[in-house]
Image 1 (cartoon, helix red, strand yellow):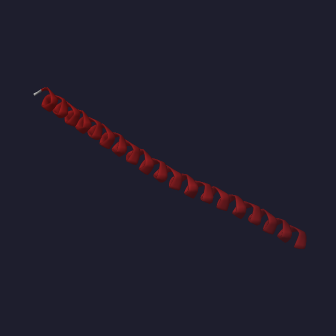
Image 2 (cartoon, helix red, strand yellow):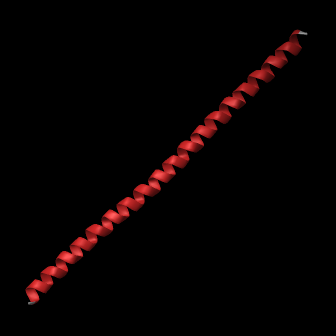
Image 3 (cartoon, helix red, strand yellow):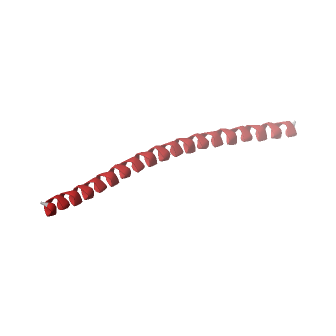
Length: 70
């Protein structure tokens, strides 16, 4: 009877550990999704900032060329 109780306890402990692992896995997946989404948003933001900078520099150069040519 003792060994059967010990086996039950081991099985219950294993089940609890699996449930804990599943919870941690779900949390990690949620954090990974959030990280991916924020990374994508940051990449787009930086791309737009870089584009604006290039357009401003190009516009400034074009303006200088226009002023010097006239």
